[in-house]
Amino acid sequence: MQAVFRILRTPHASAIRQFRAYTVPAGDSHELRTRLMSDIKTALKAKDSATASTLRSVLADVQAADKIHKDRQVSASAIRGLIAKGIARRHEAALQYDKAKRSDLAMKERQEADILQKLLPPAMSEARIDETLKQIIDSLPVSGGQHSLGQVFKAFYAQVDKSLVRPDVLKRRAQALLAAASPSSPAS
Image (tube, rainbow, N blue to C red):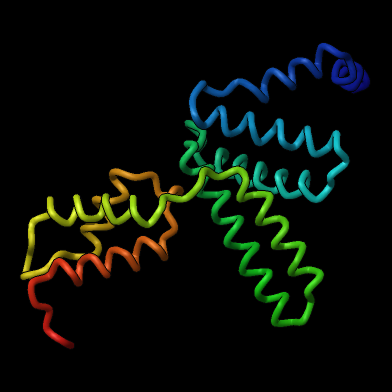
């Protein structure tokens, strides 16, 4: 038993552990993971515990998702989705803390959301969403006199990464464009 501990304490063993942490296939997912780990290291060196703990929680979410997908690692899009869920979770917690009149905790949650927001690329603008939606609506066949919102979403997400679009904005813009595109929609 002592021999095992002695081996784990050697510099060689730590080099093996570091090597294992970086044996992921090259690509966008690898770049995002590397950025996440380097941001954690930077925060630790700067003694910024709030940033380090926030980024560690996201890294833990990514590693948990990797364990679920045993045969492969999750994609960069899935990682961005996990980050977006973390942001939404923190905004929801901030609202709950505001209701409970705990502004200090609400501010902490919003700061964590801001930290995570820096990891995501900027969301698509409404103009680009509209442009893509118009192309999709024009290309889809009309069934029953109108387009289905589900068909539009399916075609949209086939072209655009889900993590680059705010779902509430997409839904609002799609409904407006579908209402404008339908020749005469009966009032229900």
